[in-house]
Amino acid sequence: MGKYDNMKYNRCGDSGVLLPGISLGLWHNFGTDAVYSNCREMILKSFDLGIIHFDIANNYGPLPGSAEETFGRIFKNELTAHRDELLIASKAGFNMSEGPFGEWGSKKHLLNSLDKSLKRTGLEYFDIFYHHRPDPNTHLDETIDALEYALRSGKALYVGVSNYSPEQTKEVIEACKKRNIRLLIHQMNYNMFDRSSEDIVDVLDSYSIGSIAYCPLAQGMLTNRYLGGIPDGSRAATEGTFLKRDNVTEDKLAKVRALSELAGKRGQTLAQMALAWVLQRATSAIIGASKFLQIEENVRALDNTHFSKDELAAIEKILI
Ligand code: NDP
Image 1 (cartoon, helix red, strand yellow):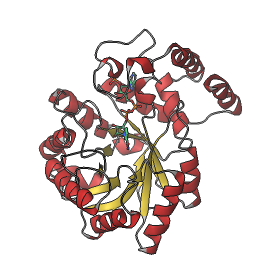
Image 2 (tube, rainbow, N blue to C red):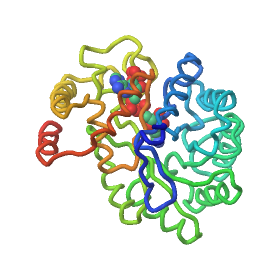
Image 3 (cartoon, rainbow, N blue to C red):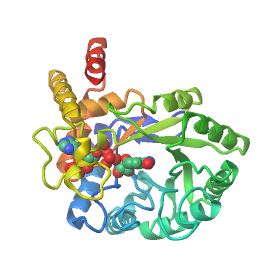
Image 4 (cartoon, rainbow, N blue to C red):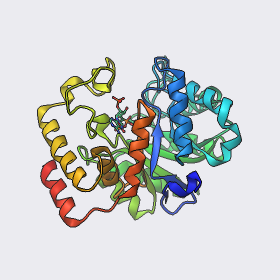
């Protein structure tokens, strides 16, 4: 059996793109503070498991840009022969550099950033280029101008948006249709603790457009990572991350313990059950990881993505 027989691939809406059920994101643990050999192991062994989709952004690090550089180094050294098998995404829109064009949704920011991201990764094109967050001060038409240019110039094969509200998502889909381009995907925050993106999926479903869930494990809370307290080296123990010690509350941990018990009855770990749960609505779940063992465990979520009515009801009861 080859790696492609072991991975489950899901069609992204009604497009030609098949995404692995589990994708890997480089937001954390791939910057200048990371150990290169560990990054290399995570990327290459993920690929061996059939994880062909890697999600990056211009500003991932620290320092901003360094996760793209790390990926570029691994790609250049060991993956160039596999370029046609890989789906590599980058994004622009969050704060990246100094000055008025260092972030948001202007054509100038998006296209400058796209060129810089291509340079850092050493790629000729991205498979998916995202606008990372809506810009309240730039007309949507200008942002879409940039996405359209990315497509027509061949610098991106597909385009997507992230963190757009349901209304903004509808607006961008309609605007793309008028220009005869397609929005491939929406990247949204979605996990058992944060279900605010379900309204977005309703919109996407009505247009047969795919979705990809970020932070599907609530940055590690929906795993066994914090059951015994906050361990050294974990995200919550690291300064400057978005998961603060204060986020790991007793109330959350009580839910985590109950969910973990339920997962055990399904023959899964909590991380596996949390990912299977997300995949009920999302085309793919982008996990993060600090070591390959986590990825290996998480991919096995795909062995059982079915939930009985009773299991779903039990989960609802815990999450209330
Ligand atoms: P997750 O919710 O998957 O959290 C990942 C963290 O959970 C890991 O770093 C690790 O923490 C812990 N973990 C993962 N698996 C296990 C396991 N089996 N056992 C124990 N702990 C585990 O996702 P992220 O928050 O990392 O986000 C994933 C990706 O989503 C990002 O890399 C990025 O690509 C994308 N993203 C996009 C955003 C957007 O605005 N579009 C915003 C945020 C993320 P530890 O490091 O402590 O070991």
